[in-house]
Length: 75
Image (cartoon, rainbow, N blue to C red; front, side, top):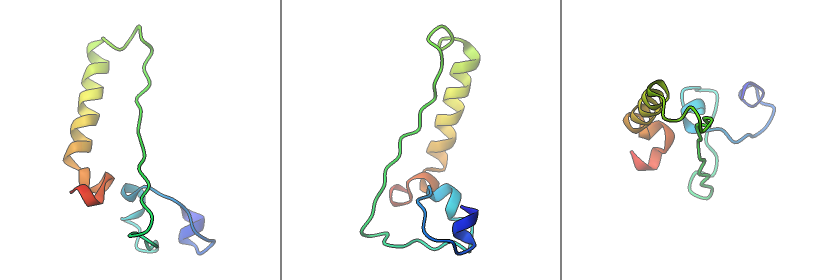
C-alpha cells in the first residue's frame, strides 16, 4: 500500500484500507469488481466457547455496521 501511495505502481486493496488515504485513486471501478471472503479460523474444539462466539458476533456486527467500507456498492 505504501509503495503504491508513493507512486510505485498499481495494487489491489480493500476499500476499507485504501479509501481513507487521499494519495490513492481508484482506477477502473466500473470495469473491475473483486469480491473477497474473510474467514475466522477456529479449532473445532474451541468454536462453541462463549468467548469465541462473542468475538465472532462482534466482528459480524461491526462489519454489518460498516458495510459501505467493505462493499461500497452495497451501502
